[in-house]
Length: 57
Image 1 (cartoon, rainbow, N blue to C red):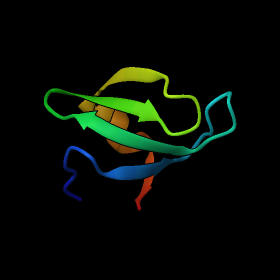
Image 2 (tube, rainbow, N blue to C red):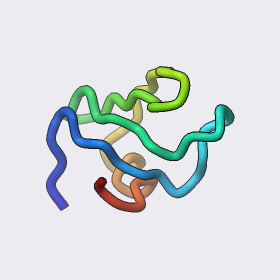
Image 3 (cartoon, rainbow, N blue to C red):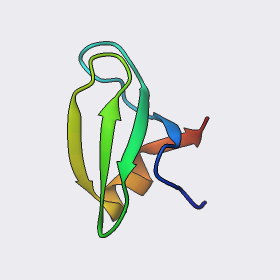
């Protein structure tokens, strides 16, 4: 599946704040994701991010 900056995705595991919805803010060798619940940002390798994503919203 192809992802673009600004896409909202649901991850398999929920964040400690209780949200499973994240927004993609950067794509490249790695993905930068921002939690919709608490606005926490993480940078994850592309391979790991693709395994974590459950579906595109």
